[in-house]
Amino acid sequence: MTTPEDAFQLLAGVFASRGDDILEIEIIPPSLGSPFLQDGCFIGITKKTLVQAYTVARQLFFKNLMSMTEDELLANLLNKNHGTDSVTDLVSTEIMLLFDCEHLTACNWRKRRLLAALARDPGALDRPSQLLQVLRTELTLLQSYQCSPLHRHTKSPTLWSHRLWVLKQLLKLEDQCPESLLDMERHELAIVLRAAELHPKNYYAFTYMRQLHALLARAPVEARDASSWTVVLARELVNPVLDWCLASPRDISGWAFGIYLLGHVPDRQLRGDAVGRVLRFARDVGWEGESLWTFIDLTVRQFDLKDVMDDVFIHDQERQDPVSSTESQISPTKWPWRARLARAKGYWVVNRSSHDT
Image 1 (cartoon, rainbow, N blue to C red):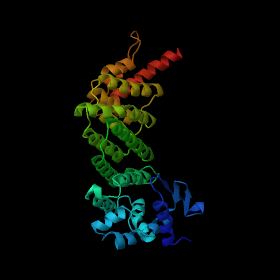
Image 2 (cartoon, helix red, strand yellow):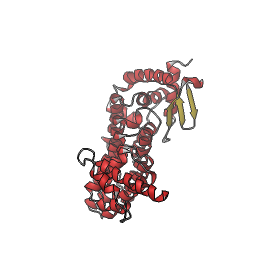
Image 3 (cartoon, rainbow, N blue to C red):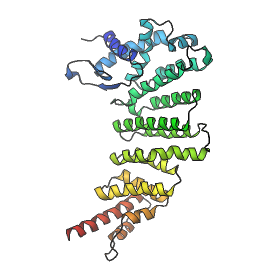
Image 4 (cartoon, one colour):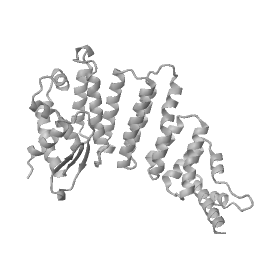
């Protein structure tokens, strides 16, 4: 039977030896017969064992870490004069956040630890790049939480807010060229889409992506004015986000983020291509879900793309067009998206009839 101390040591060993590796952590049922499983970076732990580890981590945190001075925090961060016990204490907050991703005290302590180094003269560090490495390690820890099949971590406002804060510090310390910023944006989008896949309708993940886009748009970039750089950043994400939305057509948060991106790309051709692509998907598979049709309705009205719908739903002029008559019966004020769906249904009726004959 695993004791709380044993459970803590199991997890402490994993986090202490992690380096910059990204873990995938999952809560496993006790019926598997083992409280803890590890295969490389894949970790399985029972809920009971995690609770046991958390109780020990919390005790160590309030006993040894909360009262640290700024100098002690800096020494802790830079791994100076660390014994085994000190390293074990350090990962207490990582275990606490694994159990409770909204533990503000643990999260804020990690900010204090980073701020202790940020407030010092960079020349005082052993290596100028050491602080950058620590910030990147913090990001991989957060990615381990946010991309693991855990119940709450993928949608945690505390973790997403902390991730944005860490990225802000990283951007302050290191000058970035446009391509590096685009790579960063693509990398963060992949994390957000993975989190949204694990937790559908992940409002917090897509809100983080909006905030990141605004942050990168303010970054000083040579040879570009602010407005064009904002467009470049948004344009880069349109196709991958649409790919994800078409694979997850019920996810309204993804569609809402797609509208946000199109709103920052004043290119009618790109907007028309994007909406046309979604319309053709819905037309061809017979999709009637509200989220997708809400996206179509909002983009058609917001960007004046009614001609795109006309191009997609073209009919034989000699037929009576059941689309128009059906669309007019729908209240455009209460359920405007249903008028768009009604037009598609009319198309499906006509299309089936033509195939039958």
